[in-house]
Structure formats: C-alpha cells, structure tokens
Image 1 (tube, rainbow, N blue to C red):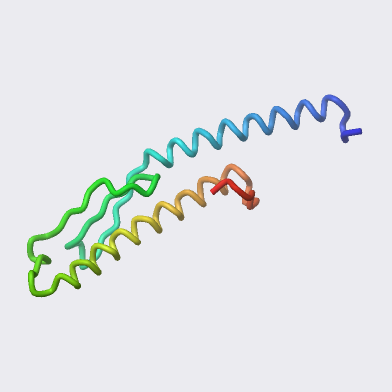
Image 2: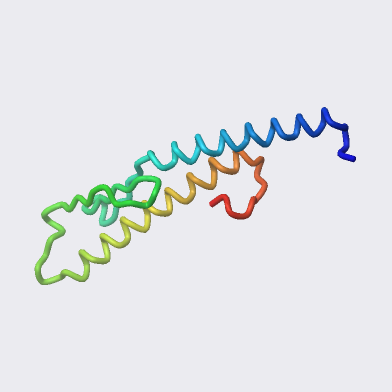
Length: 108
C-alpha cells in the first residue's frame, strides 16, 4: 500500500500534475526567450531564441576584412557559442527551480 493511503496517492498525483504544467509553461517561456551573444568587443552580435535558432547576426562594418575572413568566422562562432551557453544555463536554472535541484533524466 502507498504511504498515506489513497489520500496520499491523490496528493502525489496532484503534485505531479502541477509540476508537469509548470514544466510545460517554463519550456514555452524558455522557447520564447531571446539571448544575445557577442564577440570582438561587441563587433559581432548573434541573437538566438530558446530553441537554439539564430534570429539575427549583426556585424560592425569594421570587422569585415576581405583579407581576414577566418577572423570573422571565428568571431561569429564565438558569439553563437556564447548565446547557446546562455540558453543552456538559463534552461538549467529554470528547470532546477521546478525540480528542486533534482536531475530528472530526459527533461533537458
């Protein structure tokens, strides 16, 4: 028998349903967030949403050097990685709030 009997089981089910709704809401909010990653002192800016989709790339004209395309590529990559890192950290923090810090496989 479940500790607390039927009432305990009902309470546990209510808590699980609430947690599921809260997690769905948090996932929707995370998907709609927009983060910015920058590189080169702000000369390259990448905006991404919470689903890791690039929304925009902004380049300062000074960073565009036809003789050094490799540097520009590195800056775009660095700005994109920074934005992805922000998304990942924010997602972890939000999910941690909902799960009380427990690591639940398959959440994120």
